[in-house]
Amino acid sequence: MSTLRGRFGPDGLPEWDRCAVMGVVNVTPDSFSDGGRWFDTEVAIKRGLDLVAGGADLVDVGGESTRPGASRVDEGEELRRVVPVVRGLAAEGVVVSVDTMRAAVAEAAIEAGAVLVNDVSGGLADPAMVPVVATAGVPFVVMHWRGFSSDMNSRAVYGDVVGEVLAELRQRLDAVVDAGVDPARLVVDPGLGFAKNAEHDLALVAELGRLGRELGRPILVAASRKRFLGRVLAAPDGSPPPARERDAATAAVSTIAAREGAWAVRVHEVRPNVDAVRVVRAVEDAALAAEAARVAAGEAV
Ligand code: PMM
Image 1 (cartoon, rainbow, N blue to C red):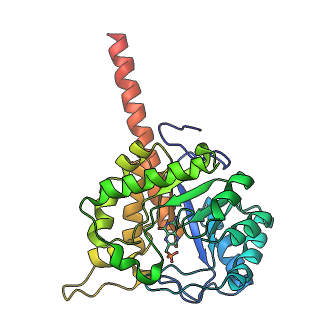
Image 2: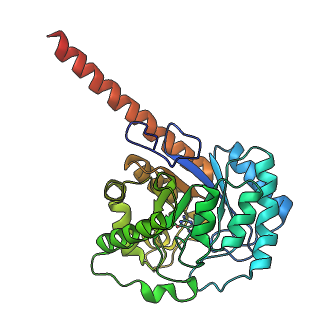
């Protein structure tokens, strides 16, 4: 485990001196926030490179939409979408993550150069996933998940959302470690919008620091353009702004996440989020300098 002023990332990835920014490339015709825009391989690779040029530290490539109600794409199609994009970006030196629930896709993506597996099901959707990750020795994102997108909204039932998400994530981390994954390579994610309504998402954002402290693992936060932000920004008649008009709100969550010690934020539009995490870093530096000056003044007396 590497630490940087309290912030730390998983073993097996580069270290960044602030909350990292993961840019998203959805190679799908139907993702809720950017569906269809990066569906062609060349266009998707170009998008990933543009995200890096804009300041993204790593790029998350996915070929299956997980928006609420989405049905599954078949494995062959997911492989065709994802693998060439991962290969193209890795060949350009990009730190690539693969967003998949399928072991075969994760395996092929690792072969093509992916260095992180981001599974929104935390290994629950495919029993072969955890063994693949354990064997490859790559970092693994374990997200809080209660079931497939087709009917996940019906599972958004909690007495104490933060307590239950914590307990379910802890259980999942234990299972993954028992199955052979190095705990130092695990990242956890509260899974905003997955079997959660807007109130649940906001309660989790309010307690990101607690999630990190209690789970003892780096936290990834993926709030980008999600429904709960649409709800917060809704017009008086209740209508939410379209997904692409939620980037300033996304950057607000990135500021909170970075301030709460999150390892990384996963976002569609990198620039405002890179700016946000850089400001947080500068403020943290100023706080440290002020503290050092106080200590020096105390010592001088
Ligand atoms: N959300 C989406 C996709 N992948 N991965 C992680 N780790 N956490 C998330 O919350 C998450 C994810 C859905 O959003 P998108 O369709 O805009 O990519």
